[in-house]
Image (cartoon, rainbow, N blue to C red; front, top):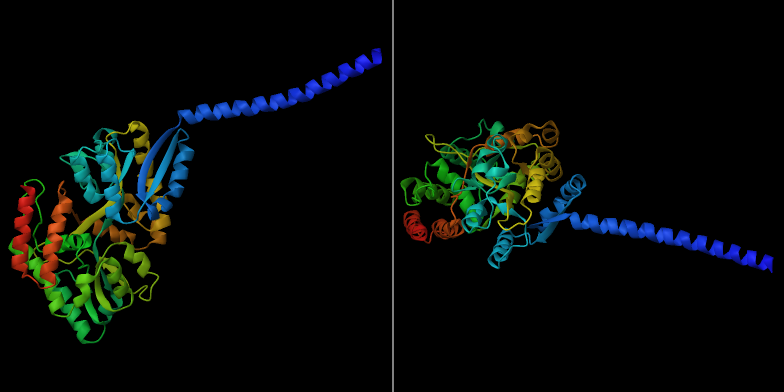
Length: 430
């Protein structure tokens, strides 16, 4: 009897020990679950919408940010790759009420519209003037509205002139500085059978047409809209001469008649196929052309201009703004600060080949080793010209595109087209 009782006690103790082990394991698991719940509850989610292609390119930056900032989840929402659709999605979100986005990834030409609508939070108190001086001036100025800063630049862009170094050197030419030199070199090399075309540019009726025209207009000493006074200069002699120059390249056979249907990619392919001496385009072409049949046979420089005037690269690029209604401004700023930092931009540029907005990176040893032409890019983008930084920019650009297209396709004379463009723009601004 005593033996049986002892055996039962022993079994009971053994059973309890096993159960205790299981209970301990369950308690440990429960402890970590509770810790994770509490920790997750303390984390802040910062949301941002980016075009799908670039959202994928941001993945390494997002992972690095979250490792260094474990209290923040950076949530990237993928959007269509078409820029206008992304703008529409952001606009719709703000118009419907409280936007779900803490940050806004802004094309430079959206800033004034979004700021004027009171959708963005001013960033002046988050960053010092000394820190802003580390960025390209045009990028910073493009992020302002009525003297307040609403966008910190991340990656820059600027239009430029590409040219065939081999063709110019073999025929005794230096790179052109003026419109006249570009015309003369083009005609001579075409006459010698060295290239089918002299000069290609973006002539399709879209935003790229306005961007390209801004550079020609600057080179002729003209202007589109004075953002301070809202004075319109599209019907000035300089503006009409700018249109006439572009039209003459078509009439003289320097540019193909189909140039009025070309965007960036059509012109890039013509240049890379060796069919043209000169190309107006953006920095992305340099990386692609370096892998084409003209690799080692081309270079880039600032756009040409009239002798008494200066060239200008149309300022493009993207940056980060903060939604007016974000509930987490401090955390949102930490994202902006990290993404636009020198280290983050270096990593992103080395991976993608985009253009940095921080001046120091154009001569960074790692970047120059991979992209030897970046020091030349700095010369171009430092000499930038802004599209009019006004809230009504989209409508103003639409007006300009329509009348430029009419002049270039010869359904209107340059004079009539620019007079009508100026009249409609004045009506818009008044």
